Image 1 (cartoon, rainbow, N blue to C red):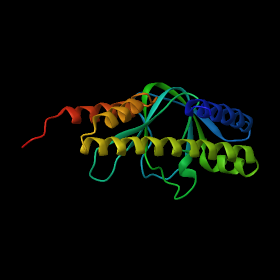
Image 2 (tube, rainbow, N blue to C red; image 1 turned 45 degrees about the vertical axis):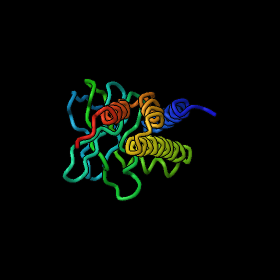
Image 3 (tube, rainbow, N blue to C red; image 1 turned 90 degrees about the vertical axis):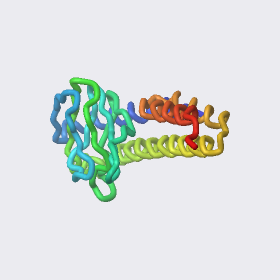
Length: 191
């Protein structure tokens, strides 16, 4: 069975190839953005999809009354904003330049949807990307929930296993979550 990273790499390569065949007919522009620039704001209408050419983006989600949490990193040749094309067509998170300057290819969401009507391969790759991200998120969420259960039950070997798996993920947010869980395990209980 292929690793998650190999599968994601294949999806990205096919998607990049498919999108490049449509760029001559899809309205697009290139944007250069500095570190800290907000490219997509959470809860705003989805009017564009971004393809990272250079630099790196972070995806942040903030629940009402909470603090923003980095939930993903988007690297070159990756697409972001595509999940909002389906459903309520609003962005579920903010996207911010974390390493730059970043060069971003901006495609109008409606144009991408129109192109997908005539290209089932493009639709399948967009679905494969979304499905892969959902699968990874489910796995990571299960690890975090299992780690919290192990922390509550003081089961150090299960906690260490979960944290080790989170630390080996390519996403720095997950490594940070593992560090936080380990610190909680080391914190003495207050009377």
